[in-house]
Image (cartoon, rainbow, N blue to C red):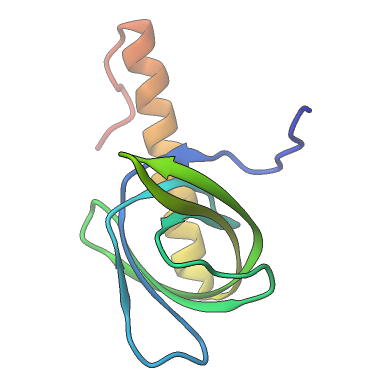
Length: 127
């Protein structure tokens, strides 16, 4: 099945902390699978359900910390290093427009650099 994506997704390993909106404790995450300006896919060891609202703190490699509210839109079971985990697709519902722009620029810059590295070219646009 071919996916119909409107926004580029970057495979990443950003530091993300999260909690359910109705929860009290923060869960630490070591991994996320990918990110776009519209959402993020997290690898979680606690089952969340489609429809759950999450409060997210995402740390970009630049050191910026972005806060967002997202909704789990899909969940699937997986195995990571022999342990049962869950992949959770989360759509951003409430995110500051400047933060969304920062994520979009982060994704674009990193996808561009990956492509340039594959082509063996320098990043001529990096400032």
